[in-house]
Image 1 (spheres, rainbow, N blue to C red):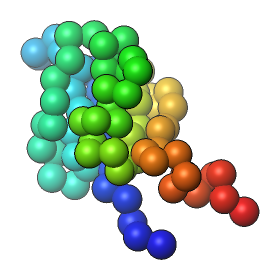
Image 2 (cartoon, rainbow, N blue to C red; image 1 turned 90 degrees about the vertical axis):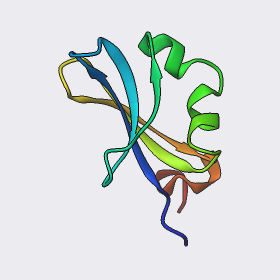
Image 3 (tube, rainbow, N blue to C red; image 1 turned 135 degrees about the vertical axis):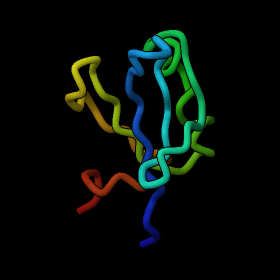
Length: 79
């Protein structure tokens, strides 16, 4: 099984924006005004190129949820 690229969606207090970053490099892929704008209908999936794992963090930095694209690649769904 190929290893999926990993991303994190978190709030940047300095810019007051939600940022989608590639883990490891820290490269900002996309910025959003609100968390809702980032997580609505397919926006994250398109931003990661339809393949990747995204950790969505709360404002306090704790992980809220993790989404895998495509869903069939989610290791928790296999077995």
